[in-house]
View 1: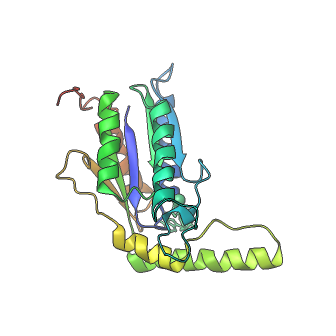
View 2 (view 1 turned 45 degrees about the horizontal axis):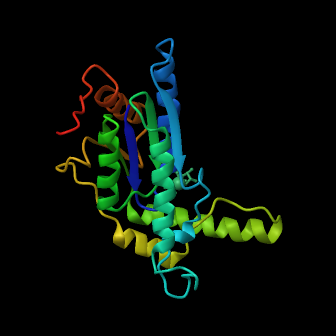
View 3 (view 1 turned 180 degrees about the horizontal axis):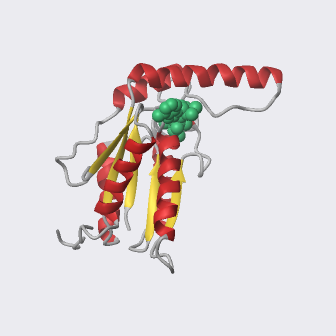
Length: 217
Ligand code: ADP
Ligand code: MG
């Protein structure tokens, strides 16, 4: 199956939702014996990609980088390689990340198509101020834990990097082939609502109504 591309603002709850979806899909996959699909969760964290690769501020871009966003390009190449290694008709891949560039989502869509498997977008929607608060909270916790215990809290974004990513974010557009079908979970969606969204996603991607992907479509 399908490649599920998670997309949303920085610190908007993407990893939380990606894990919930992973749990949901694990249960669905286990309903058939032997299981029809294998499940993979790929993210910046699983590939040890730092938040700093998205930072384009001139004073933080390291001197050895070839251009302002080369480290981000390298990160995308690593993610692309990881997806390509496992994607097939029998594999469900959840790609948890910002996935904010429309050209990048297009590239992933083409990769899925080449593997004759569908793709969809899971848009994690969250008010900007709410997401900003999460990042600020993370920055505070990180400072506290490194000062007091020497262990680190989840990585936060530098504020300028965070603002810039929000500014650069290219909203998925369900009118395009590569951003559809599009499913959305909102910050306030409770368990029941989230399950309904995941049910819809499953039906479209793996259920009876699953779209057949033809190579030259
Ligand atoms: P991202 O992957 O987008 O950076 P995370 O999933 O890591 O975001 O979430 C950041 C923080 O926000 C975590 O502490 C998480 O517990 C909290 N969080 C995420 N989604 C929600 C939600 N829908 N409701 C309440 N808290 C949430
Ligand atoms: Mg995350």
